[in-house]
Length: 557
Image (cartoon, rainbow, N blue to C red; front, side, top):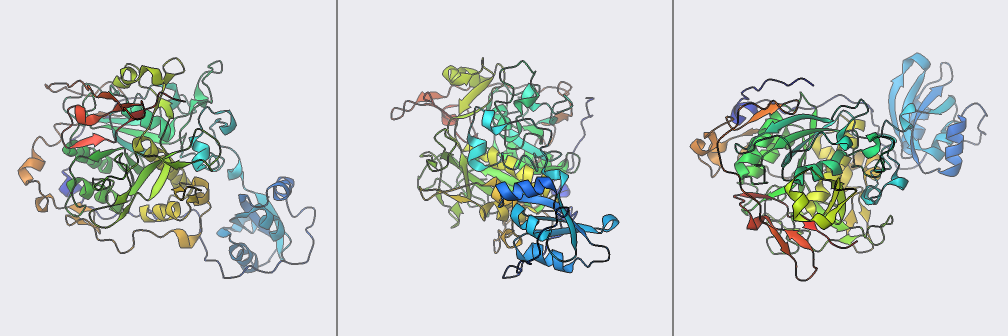
């Protein structure tokens, strides 16, 4: 892939004066259901009115959600059939004039009964129900987290293909086979280097590559004789990744670096179809979202049409556990961690003891969602700091590593969002959040867990969230414009070294000049005396005003 010449992006103030980018392309025209199901007709289903595959599915799994094409009799009106679909909890879609039909989504059993309705000629499964390019087979995978949140059940319908997920992190080892697409090219379609002391777009620390694998890894593209083929995969195995490296080569970053990274994502949003932004990090300064500059930046992205997913933090039930940006911002999706026990069932899933939860300083309950975040196997960046931090945590000849934390929970949600947006590209961030929040699975422990498949089978009344919220004092929600002169940072501080810090390319390698500076070695491994776990504690390394949500290494299981 040829490199793209570096450009001087516009300042954030000018950039964010653009209007709110509303994506209005609708794939499905949704109708509101009535309060009671339409009575079933007594007519029997003619042999030719329902296709064999649909008839078999209706018999074996009548509650499975399916996409169908409903063909009508010549000159038959569509109103009655469409009413049947919506009244029975389904969704009637676009009219297909060419064949006198319309698309619909409903349960398989109801689809079979629909074929018996007056005026209906035939009901056929839509081709979108066939598996997409990913060859990942959940039953053969070495990990269980996709089953826990049911992202694997969405893969026959969507895998995040074509959706860009921007990662504000430590870089991505984009040349790894798990990041290839079906064409053999890397799905890390662009890399930006924000920090002046970073010498490469590659991930020398390891955090970003691990997170990227949980979002969009796909080991099914490994060689046929590779024993790791098909064993590991992220929540959206065909999504594109945009790597925005905001740290130096050893994971050191500041709030300003992170904000510059968000600015880059906004500048190139349309170019790479960036619909999701993953932030597996938190500030070390507790401040109200109303005045916090990082909170203002993530709200600017949200109001411009990007779904922001942030880790909740690893402070457990501390009084200030959820007081840190960006996870304390009420607009964004904050994600806590569950321990799924390494099993394929959900009855033993419980809240991880380190996962931050509570009430923010502004009175909001956080986090909104939970996903697995303990013993998470994902890709290991070759030669990175992660390799030496916990050598015992590596597996598969050092190509994967086990780590945990809310840093590892957030990317599962980010991947689930990418798949939803492939299916529903017209959804706004508020609608995505509503679908996820209203379709969580209750656990025996009293907690709730992300259920990606339930969110896929949404109902219109569930697409509601963030109502009545007040935005940051320094953000205009109508335009996404940020007035930094109203923040605690001076204009001079914000403009210092603007964008001379950043260089980027759509291919690895040609990243422009380097900057003089000092690299800092992360000496941050400690042993938790209570659990015996190796804990990577960024407070022992040279972090200034931000840090990655602390990674936890487990020596057991």
